[in-house]
Length: 327
Image (cartoon, rainbow, N blue to C red; front, side):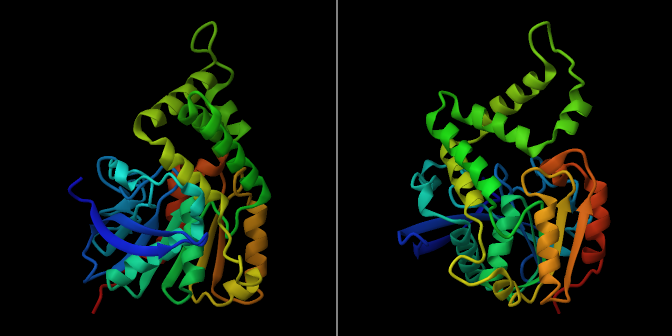
């Protein structure tokens, strides 16, 4: 992959005490790192650094004349180690339980140092990518001007950990692990209302409901493009988000973050519940003036951040419409 660049992170010591060497891959889009403000985009569970382009997963939001305009900003995206985007077996991580979301944030911070980046205009990420964004802000509290966690939280809740535990069991015990894990996950990423609106109990044939056909399709599609080691790794990162671990209370940690924190939640999210985000906002207001919360109205649940682009545009446009270059 010609556009994929690499940074070597030697002898990194994980939170679990293991020493590993990481070959971190990344991509940049838009203006160069040296002459524009930088936006770090952290991908979701089955995503990658290909934010825009032929297979870009956020083309509707980022690009020329888009909400985040690549004519004005440098877009930087790292691949979470072990996500398999470089298609090499050497980059896969089998000992996935040695890693946490905080490890990924620290690895990203080391990579930023190698790139001589000491300030980010914004960090934005959805789902697990947003959790990594929270972890990066807690690790480097003065690094980020605008922290934008979308459909996520600063910690993995008991509900989330429970579902990650089920996912891990499927991935380790099923005869078709990727397909089955993906089908289970898709029911959590959407809502009963979303399924009803989309399928209305219609059938593909006399024996198969369209709901079942759609789940089969997504399971089979992921099986063809994703590696089981990568899924296990990303699921592990999702279950280990916690910016307070061995640091103190949430307010003690968050009060040190200088960023303007823009929390974006979805009213129907069954994965990262909006009530958790509103509680976070109310707590943050006790110690920070520069905190905002926005709620996307959607029947589509957690996946709303990949669907409700008009609402996302209205939320994000005031942040990114000011076009500033490095002097």
